[in-house]
Length: 76
Image: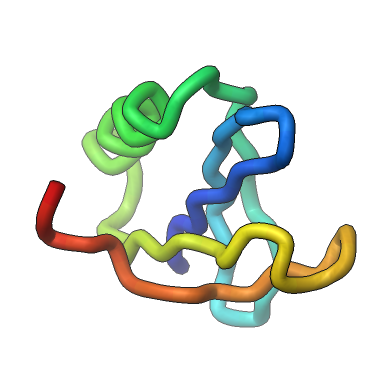
């Protein structure tokens, strides 16, 4: 399982829990900022399993096609 952080052109952020097979297990609500989304992920990680966090590369692929661009950065 991994947590994928996503956002769109409208500035909305959300996370998705993605299983080993690539299927989405859970999706969050929309958040107004990356910070709010990361707070939601932090709450999920308290209650859920350990899972790496990754980000999609925005707009790199067409709608419905998600790509993972990098691991959670350690800096600000």
